Length: 308
Image (cartoon, rainbow, N blue to C red; front, side, top):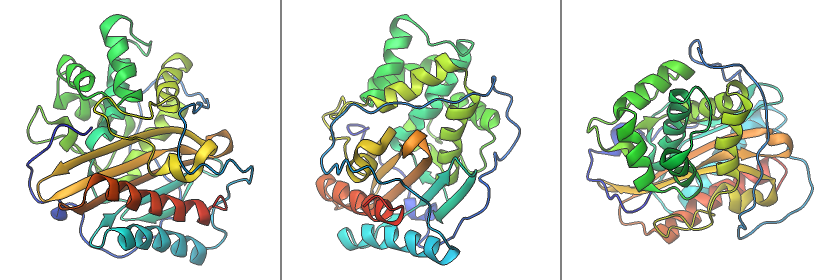
């Protein structure tokens, strides 16, 4: 999202300037899921992205705990070198092993901006018995995911009950650090931890029936280079991982005295790695510089996974 400038409370209370929190155990679900039958799929990415290297090197997790800690530190420092005073969260989940292999502030809540559209999409599909809807609802669902269309998101948010969308999806997936906005119409002020964002992608991959799964991951894979509000969506993961990017959901907004820029998605052969990299920056940061900062962090991560 871009045009919904938000005057909210201080973000720093939610994302404290903490040290690296290494995460190397299983991701877990945070609770029992009552969703549909499990399955698996892999999306595609057709939108061009600047800085694609297109090489065929396989992505692999850092080999040792020390390497994982260095990887997390490298990502956080790369962001901060471009925009000093930034606060970055990070989780990298290896779907092959079921482990979260790199983490920083993994369980601290960040404002989602448009990343909450993942939760809206899941709730819309739940409301249609896990079948992709037709008509205006279906076109809004696609536009919300691929073009990050805020108008489409607002219509779906209102149609499906506002904050109840988040509350239902939290229970469905078993999220631990996700809360709806205090102002019911400001869906962008939902908060999620990096770990909960990754859990949401894992739910999309493993728990949705194929038609619903493909509807979401297909739209995230075929995302528009330019969002509905004119924002360039090719920062962060797609800029760093190039053709190895499978699916992406970005988020951006000014909020209070800060700027929020989030890059999240799935990368690697077979969609092996799920990544959440939310970042909060000082409010005087322009969006071009903010994109550069998040992309620098994503490129540091790509190097740590052997893809840079």
